[in-house]
Length: 285
Image (cartoon, rainbow, N blue to C red; front, side, top):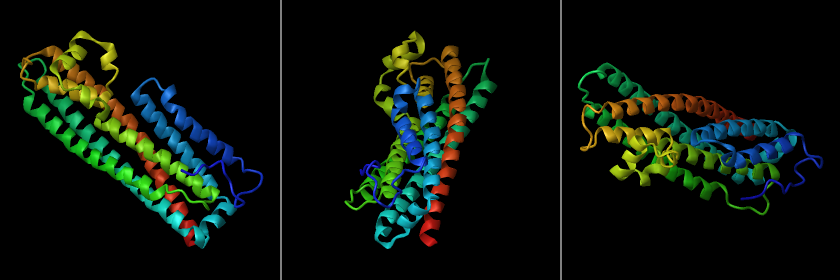
């Protein structure tokens, strides 16, 4: 990937104030993993940070020198690649929005069913299986989206000897946006925890023996998957109130997590559209 620190004569000899700000926002995003206390916090911080970075991009695109450079015919292919990448990222953002909405609706429905049945001989197997089936659909869509995201790098981030500075910066932004979207989609699917959820021993240790080190490996989505798999396990008694209570708590936590993420994803979606429109306007001016 071309470095944004190598600038051409297309930019002013004295950098515009937004350029150091751009560099700082990019640095913060790359360092965000080390400073976050949880996967949920890290994901939301990345979404917020990416929004701030895209705001810097908007200001960069408003500079006359950058507009002139991007509109030159010899840079048309590079800009087209960036536009194609932005469209694919918008598609990924839409998939994340749909996945969050679908999971939230399933979460709220299951919570309501558990509340209505609480206090009696609870039989939740069919409702829980319905939720887990919905999760499988979400994970399948996410897996497909992640595979498509991997193709963006091959098409967009080819190195060019004559890349102008603003194109390098836009490529930097798409590169880190790609990484954040892949992280977001993996977070929603609980992908990092899947290989560790296979055995009943692991599940029971987390939920009934409070092994904090193992539980901390799971995000809110994966914790719900675990808790609900307990309820439909052949080894689980139908009337086990502890398992039901744990599932209810995990569902409540997940709903709060989703609401938090939805706000960040929606804000990011609007900024991505704005950036794409600005690029199109420059080309059509």
